[in-house]
Image (cartoon, rainbow, N blue to C red):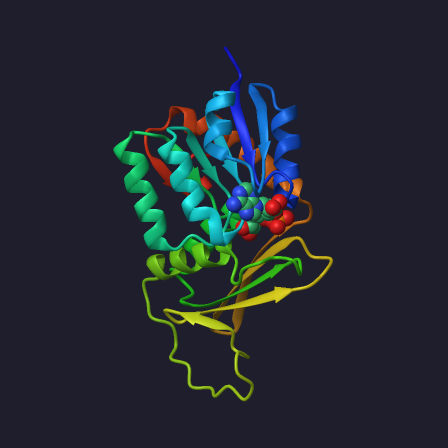
Length: 244
Ligand SMILES: NC(=O)c1ccc[n+]([C@@H]2O[C@H](COP(=O)([O-])OP(=O)(O)OC[C@H]3O[C@@H](n4cnc5c(N)ncnc54)[C@H](O)[C@@H]3O)[C@@H](O)[C@H]2O)c1
């Protein structure tokens, strides 16, 4: 069977470089172009007869880029964080109207997907939960896409309300950001890659579920798997867990 023809967009970036290497090394995938800022993606898609575009760019351009990819009729594999829920919905409408398979994944690491799954199970027993996400100091957005996705999953799966909070912040932001009673704290430091803890508090006990990506190659099996899976889908999926 012919190899799947893949373009990496954002190929000069940290994730883009790693994804280019991974796709090049993966049997059944062919890296046909490495695109970055200033390149004409639509032209490249046509010239290279691409079937999949993997996007690791930035939050400010990902929505328009995803629309461009879908508009060109190729399968999107979107790893860039920062898409708003209504933008994800709009992209799903556009893609689904064309029966075009695609995937948006806030996190391509298998361990991170499991962390979210286990956290979703735990919140049914422990409604009091906070998230600490830790990333390298050049990450453009906060909180991370993974933290936002975890928050949404926890808020939806929670069956009991958390204890009401009464504390006063002496220093603004000390309690992090909060959505539906779930606090999220973003740590940015050199030396980190991508890490997250979900901490549950109960009666005289706590439960911590932690995932660490210690190198960007941790995301690559998920990226390569997604490039294959989108070829057989006829809708735009949100979350790697749906194709594992
Ligand atoms: N889904 C995941 O598993 C996962 C994991 C890690 C990082 N990320 C996300 O991936 C994205 C990229 O992260 P990074 O660390 O590689 O960032 P980076 O800043 O190193 O790379 C971004 C690249 O995108 C390019 N770019 C910017 N605008 C562009 C445009 N309009 N068209 C084409 N290229 C453009 C930049 O020139 C740069 O080369 C971020 O949003 C990050 O949060 C996702």
